[in-house]
Length: 317
Ligand SMILES: C[S@@+](CC[C@H](N)C(=O)[O-])C[C@H]1O[C@@H](n2cnc3c(N)ncnc32)[C@H](O)[C@@H]1O
Image (cartoon, rainbow, N blue to C red; front, top):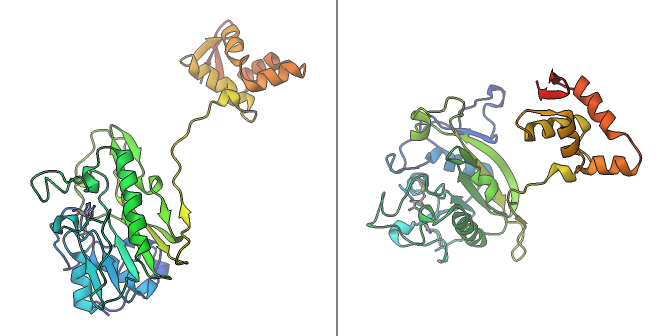
């Protein structure tokens, strides 16, 4: 199929799986297809590997960017269609045109912007931010909403039995990590949940000022199959929720003591600890059962990684 022998073209990082398709993708040499200077471009070898894995007969790419998918498909005679907001195609609203052989696509390459990590409209192309540009979304919530809409639209145009392949990376803002791949819905039956190693990225090249922050050098690959024509299985992303451990009947006494001490800044008197812990669900249950929970607290202080620093005063060790 290729200039370099048969797929897979991903470098076999786990050598025993050489020659097999895995969920670990790595393309240190991106290959000649598309514009290698288009910000955020991927390797055409990634497209070829997915085409080979899923035996896709036609490919659509609604996030054309530098034209990588188009370049690969042209060279290997794979029927294709590609478009981009830059050229007037809006995946949020428009129907996907048929591929070059007149067919609906077997595979959609869904390589959306990673929110505003690279701002496309107004920076890479165009005079000003475009309201339909996913990289110009007003907020992260808005980006997630747009990404879900776009993904549903792409999915709905795939042939039954076909696939949508999403490639997306995480972003970090003010030290907070946002795993975009866990924040978007997934439409269809998940067939592959994998990792793609990033080469030649600005983020990884620029040393991060904080040394204890790991550089982000992977992207996430999810491939969904379309099993049915009307009914769409959706894996709905859950927002982050918090729960108050003081309501938990499962928190251990050692952990309760640790939390209480940490809530006091790391150290506290025994009487203060009793006061704090008395509102915990386990303490209230113990009191109702006539169990001496204060004795349990004292035992945990002596046995569980805590230190007496003064008479009746304890701290986390
Ligand atoms: C990560 S890039 C794709 C790069 C491409 N895979 C390549 O190899 O060059 C994402 C693209 O999505 C486009 N885009 C953003 N919002 C869009 C929308 N609503 N409809 C279609 N394309 C959009 C951007 O203009 C940008 O070119």
